[in-house]
Length: 79
Length: 395
Image (cartoon, chains in turn brown, purple):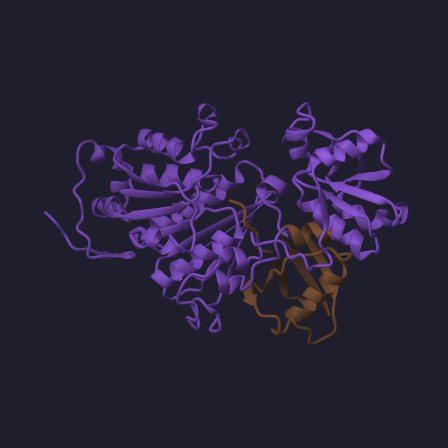
């Protein structure tokens, strides 16, 4: 299945894109999405982000479905 | 006349009268049904604590003072720096070198002399946070580091104070309202802090000057709504802002039943937040990945002697255009992996960046790739400018 993942802050910088289409096996989870993205980051160390599926905060074992909008939101601390 | 009110987070406090020119000053509020005379007296009775008088704290202090919040507490121990003025509109050019608290007090007095300002010229710590926060109705997090964010969150959860959260990075921002009875807290969103140095600060990563204005005014709006008990606040929602595409999005948060702060309530007292965030402690000498640091003077000596080593600058090309150290080779951090085949693993390599954070990252990356003689220039080109060559501009 194909998923459109929106990236923010350091994850967008590390992957060089604001959004990425991912091909994942059926019955993948939010954690699988992060692992697939991290594999594309060329080993860059990245802060563990919050992940939202369909505009709702997800846990890593939450399932994702084809066409779900997924967003990766890293912690930022500037003020 | 005194009245008891039960609205917003404040309970059982006597409402002060509006006096002098206050009716006229707040007239645009008084004709709003959501504020009206009672709401304005509410605001006058309210006490709001701002943690940080910097980028976010600037619009917060200005708008909350203008709105007539009776008491504004400010926690900041910093001094106004020239590099602050691009975004910290609470302070002016004439304030450079003054404590931010003094500058803020002067500015707030000019905006609205009816506001009482209580200044805390100190770092917020586990030792003083509960004492400082205790007397306030709403706490607003405008700080610039993870330690203080977790500290503020936990203190708010323990005391039952709403925490109006805002945070910024380059062109992006986040805002929410945490630590209310019904809603999630910061730890429900980010249970663990990122390893130190992984998330660049404004000084390291840059920030567009209006961004704290955008995010800080949203925090001010949420603070006023909480005080007035009107509208729908960001409780249970995270607002994300991307100023480059001008996209505002909200996502639903959930209270995590296993959250040690607001879920299991395992956190009954404040902890050591430097340790929690892995910063400030004594260096871990047993870490084989530790990078040896050289001071700017040591590196300058090596250059003068003509030592055989490579000097790598891992900043970005636009930073290289502002200032550079003669003899350095530009390899932006993101390209270090690609540059490895062009480097000799047996040769000594000194790496620098702006302040020393990115270069430490690059050094660890090279060490992991088998390089054994990697050194980090402590304090980066900023310290180089201070200690070796003041002609190099600081930015």
